Image (cartoon, rainbow, N blue to C red; front, side, top):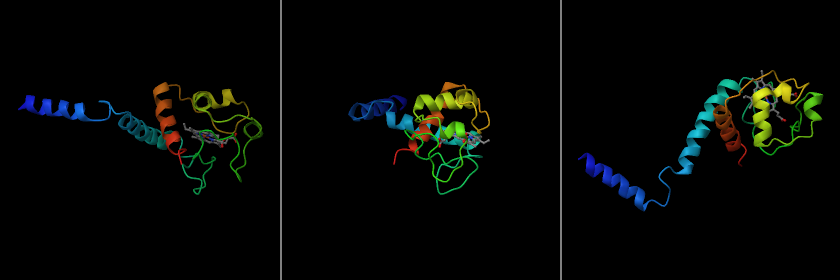
Length: 131
Ligand code: HEC
């Protein structure tokens, strides 16, 4: 019986237009893990939706956004005048050591050094930037 189920499974993969570990499934898992991490590490200060006011600026559409540009939010001079754009690399540096990356920011230090955790949070932030 085990063999029949196994070969049925393999047959399904053989006719599937997607690779065995479909990237979309993997991405979905990363986004979900990132959402959980966002809620434990970032949500107390940041909303994922600009209609929901929080202590920090909202982070929807953060990927590709010029830093310090959410209208009505009072940024530190350091962030408002930084001239940077939030690329994945900049967001990694920020998560790892935001006040080292940008001295004078008013965001309290977060030290997320684990690249996998950064990957997950980036996947989530990318997902809320996609529209
Ligand atoms: C204790 C509160 C707090 C936590 C926790 C926090 N932030 Fe922040 N964050 C802020 C504040 C306040 C600012 C505005 C900083 C400034 O103006 O210098 C900010 C700014 C930012 C910005 C710049 C946004 C823009 O519009 O340019 C990004 C990106 C960011 N935070 C990401 C994160 C991520 C990702 C996490 C979780 C890993 C996180 N923050 C956790 C308070 C926080």
